[in-house]
Length: 298
Ligand code: FES
Image (cartoon, rainbow, N blue to C red):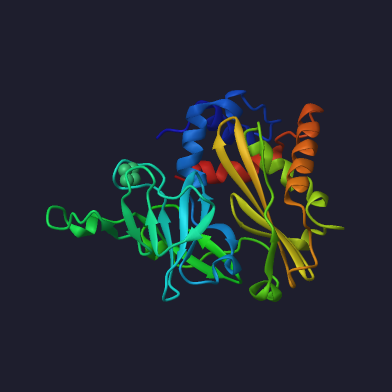
């Protein structure tokens, strides 16, 4: 897919050291969103949650990585899998709950049943169809420093063997930490504005933030980490005009940090809306210096 014109012009403006004038389509165009999905959202790896949510065997949690719905499944033997939450029968989501038991994943639409490793168990179609096709698609998944990473790309696994940390240091306590709350809010913004808002508002996510507190994992996930507590932030693009922001608060012990998910999400949405209304959030040259190499790379 060729780059839409509103993206392609950014490279020249950066080269010429000009003030960057972003075309309106950059924040609203369906073709821009499609190009970003292909070139940026689906890059490996995305930090999606903390491993303590899947300590118990035989459980799943539903997460979103890029624009994909994924079931993280801990099977009865302790193995971890990331299954596409798309039924092989007619393409509906297999699980709509945020978490649940995983001995059998039962699609609510026509009742097809899948094992925790994604194999179709009922109905038994193995005499008519290659069994290799009778399973939910899966993605590479890994746990690093206590966080669960998913690779939503379909790149060969040899290229995606280890979740990278692009900047910062993950504190050692995080491996044994706990999730204390997971507020989430939706904003009627393009994802680029949501990301810019988060980057420019660290005070909303931790006390007395310092640039050393920031850990960056990839384009759409980052963490603010301080002694004994941390906040994983996830930007989840839903469409060109709507974005979810998820915060995952974690602490060295599970009583010390942030309760009241609904209040946090509402507070965040109000601040975001107020800043958008006052024109306080805008894409600047440093944003485009980050964005352009990712979009022009392939
Ligand atoms: S779509 Fe899942 S059983 Fe039909």
